[in-house]
Image 1: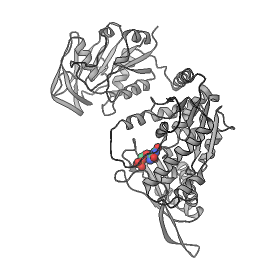
Image 2: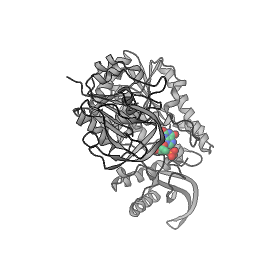
Image 3: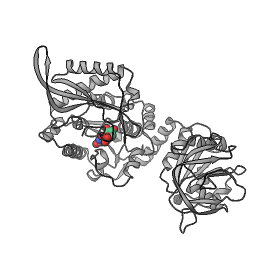
Image 4: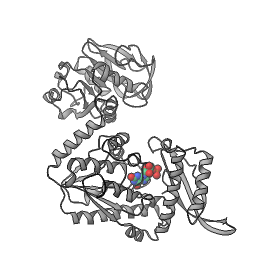
Length: 514
Ligand code: XMP
């Protein structure tokens, strides 16, 4: 009996993880293996119901081009080739690959002529995402061309009798219309996979994998209370709870009540069996931040202090074998984007490995996207308010208090932010806004309250809509909701007499104020 999974063979393309994601969205388990590290015997042992060849940067006919044992085409397993994978399939099976007279990049109209196979859902003229300099000039014997463009004679081809399909474009990216449906048709229609992959099976597998890797070793995790590190904590607790120590540094720059909530979940009263260390470092942070107004210096101080506190704590704990991290897939793509200008020195636990003594890193979430991490968190029994939490910057409220940070200002911004959150929730808007918060401007203005002159702070409310946080627009919050928030903040939060709403998009603004 086949194992009901798809094997993705990686030839070095940039969207490979997206392919895995699309397959998983069909409810089918998939694994990515590098072409150089997987032999035919291993493929047989893996027993996939279907195989996908990914894109890649090389020429299929070039010297030393990534390739694969031709025996793969004799296994009786359907194969889908994407971009480089399509060319490789064509080349190995006797077709012709050449450098294309005109390369195609980005949005391209593809004329679809054969919809019996995986292109069932396609429009006659279907917008697809292309990225290639070579092309298939002649398909191998037995193949029918099912799509072409003005510049590419074989944009898709198939040999349905052997279950071989190839597309020159990238069905895995969102820009390709119906792309996800093409992959779905391959996985469910051609390979006939059952839809049995769910987060609970991912959790089970990861728990087993962590147990095997860790053995009786000791694991250390810097728990921030954000979604990713919390899900790692829950997962590791289930796998190797008593061997795990979570260090939670309360830098005094969390949202209102958040530090206590983290302790309630992971501390001794919580449901997880692990060693939880809370370090109350607020005073220490405020002392370091006293008099500092430059945003980058503030960020650096908060980041460095975190490392120092964490280092001290880990010394108390003693030698550990593994350092766990909540790295998720987008972190990996983003860090792979090359060198761009430093807009903000982002702070997360990525800097830790240099400072703490350990043998190996474990990153159980590195294959998951954010929404999958949230789903896994639910599966592991974390409360909804935690798993659906919005992104929160590593330096916390430190970058939402413009200018110098003091304990008093932290209290003001925490209270204002809690009111804003509560009202957005009550208005049923929380799910439709990507990120929102109250910030404390470094501005005092004159006001009047109960016949007295006031000279107090102004709060700025921010709310943005974005899919990737690289660009964003301000959310259109109904006027009456903003009015209610304003009234409550000026009435309930001492030393605030004015409230602004930030209309700025990103760019030119950023999501955070500093
Ligand atoms: P910006 O302000 O750069 O924010 O437009 C984009 C997204 O990143 C979050 N952010 C951070 N996240 N460490 C983080 O882990 C940081 O130092 C940091 N700074 C900003 C921000 O909340 C938004 O979601």
